[in-house]
Length: 54
Image (cartoon, rainbow, N blue to C red; front, top):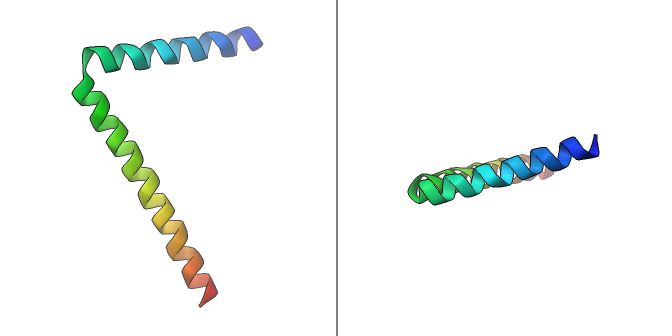
């Protein structure tokens, strides 16, 4: 099982590097979308907690 995890991690790293090398603009767009998603999720949690305190 540990070997399968190592192989999967290796494949993911290779895929990410391949994506960055072949299409850096697209990779930057994907990173931006990811950070926007994290930001909006954090904003939602903050709003929820603020409403709970009120």
